[in-house]
Image (cartoon, rainbow, N blue to C red; front, side, top):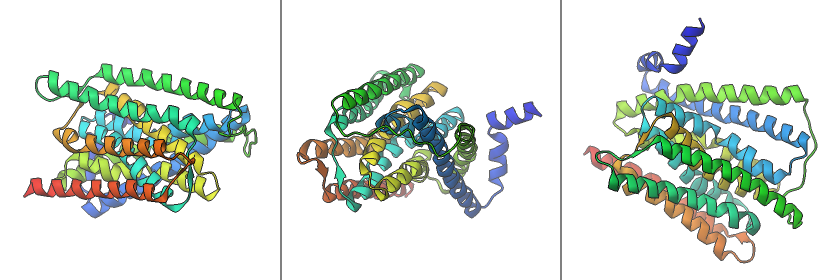
Length: 353
């Protein structure tokens, strides 16, 4: 029995064979259920982790910039690692890059259009540069692979190891910056020592949410791949739209909740942190699982779109001297995300003609 369970987890042949017998509409329903399960499982995990951290007296800014961001990027990490393990490098890389575009363009753009978002320069002038720098490093290494490698460019395992080491440095520096902010008495979050649940329930929500995320991602990846094969859409296109948006639902839910409760600054920190983790954690872990081939359309389309949105976001931080984002700036970012989707499908349809 244990061997059968491990075979089911490690060998996607059984699941792919089962999904091939489903009609397309049923596969879309399965994907929708998996996306909801991913979001709910991550939500439970975050609630448990945040409450557990609150019991230790950690500053709220540390929880938001590290633990919450780690929790909300877990779906992307599991989807990309499993996709890489299954040999779908376009799905693995496209999910990470597409999630960065969705987080900044769609989620931040929409919430910025809905309400006034403060610019916390102490945090954004530090983590914001890591956000842009990690994405630029990814594109730079990919370009170097394109120039120097013979055949198809590949992100090797050493790239994944480098990204995970940089992730550790980022988490440490975020904690250090948070302590500096507290010492300077900057309003970046107060300690929250309240706890609404017992220690056992905290761990139950963390472990239970993690298991839901793993199981949902295990089904979501082959279901998306099967639909992509049926309709002739490349795996990376599906990853950068449907799957990337679905696995970004935890960030969207966090954004809506923070705005509704009158704390939009938490949303900004979570979006920036999630972008960093999507690059260093999601793509890094996927590359360690299996070297990632970089499809040609990433150089022509996905990478330029990602850098354009991130550098525009950075430009808005630099120009907002009065400490707040404008609604029209959110409109620009959201409009660029919509244009990204339209052009992506337009290019895909033209290739099929």
